[in-house]
Image 1 (cartoon, rainbow, N blue to C red):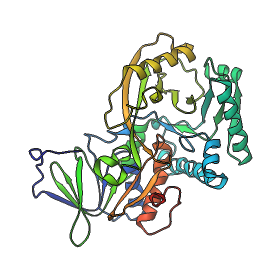
Image 2 (spheres, rainbow, N blue to C red; image 1 turned 60 degrees about the vertical axis):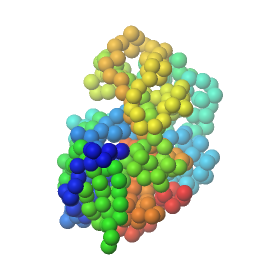
Image 3 (cartoon, rainbow, N blue to C red; image 1 turned 135 degrees about the horizontal axis):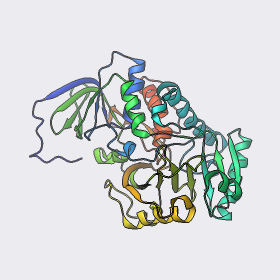
Image 4 (tube, rainbow, N blue to C red; image 1 turned 90 degrees about the horizontal axis):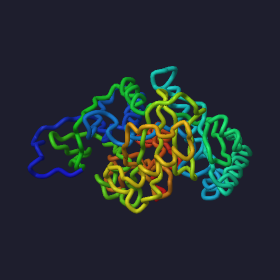
Length: 388
């Protein structure tokens, strides 16, 4: 997000609007949807740095719509207490309910599957923790199922797992098809190739956003940059950290998996796609010190680990060809929970981000909460940026 003096061709060219949204991913489109639903007369402009929607994490993720957060529920419970942990879980459940009602509906083209996801343990220690998690969740009326080794073999054809649990209300989807459906249902002007490199206040109120080719003046601005937030404003440097995630996809095989899976304390994840391909991501723990920053390059170490995982655990993938490899930049928050708020020094600049690898599972509801904040309504304290 830097433009040289020579590249700055904006001059006096200016677009005006009521609301300027920076970022054309799931959060930006979600904010646009809720804004227009509340006030259809608003002139909303969405600025996307790439040539099309979803150039960032939304077009590079694994398509999981999962409940909760980056941690197993028992760790959420231990850190935040019962009431807050349950609130966090229900917030993400509501996210999926809202997506179903407002966007997904009965659209079979989105490759939507809401039959749950699995969390698998390759060690007795992890399985013990998963069983403790399931007991706690069942006590709090969260839908979960315990599986043993033979269940996993039968339902997932996955080897070398001692047990696991299934979160019955999780889902998965084709993320770019979801994004395009959002855009089709939202009366918003989308401007591609419009990377914002600075934001400044306008005397008398409002904001001016500068891009390479034009400026945008708006009553308010909304930043939905997630992992790229700190590149535009230093406020986010100690709150949202850019973290790279790597993925690979194999050639198609006959369907064999009941649903998407997590493994290794949610660090690794895999699923079979509608066309039979198998997607796997994770293993950033192998290069934790360097899997940070804004680059979306892949590395040999992690890509090799992803492939070796498939060979060890999924016999249907033995010696299968890899067709796609990529990486994406996620936004990890300082405490694992999303941030919704406005900049302290620029109260007309709002933001939502810090989804910690769970953007599809949190962004639609977080965007609704952001619109509540813009309109002066109270929002949950665990997503409010004022907690920092």
